[in-house]
Image (cartoon, rainbow, N blue to C red; front, side):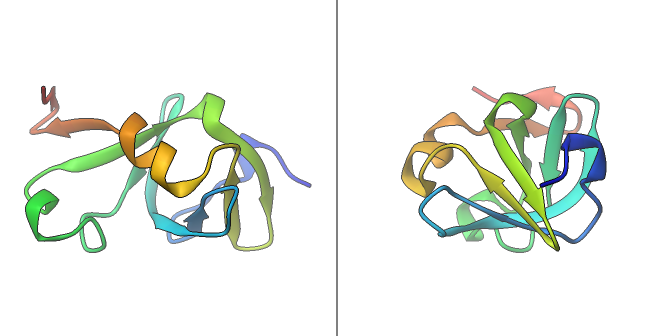
Length: 86
């Protein structure tokens, strides 16, 4: 098991239930910035971020979160042009 500092670009992010959440674009401070390409058409104009506190483990090429996929989606932090949405 690895730590948050081992997260790299293009790793897959999955929920505790194994559901695909997204792909790491990069680590941005204490958050994971997800790529836009698998955020869905309604979200492709902005980025989703996942707080560090949701990361349960980093293993191989996957980042596993401590919450199930449906819960994580509700906890996304969203930004467009560097400004929070919502």
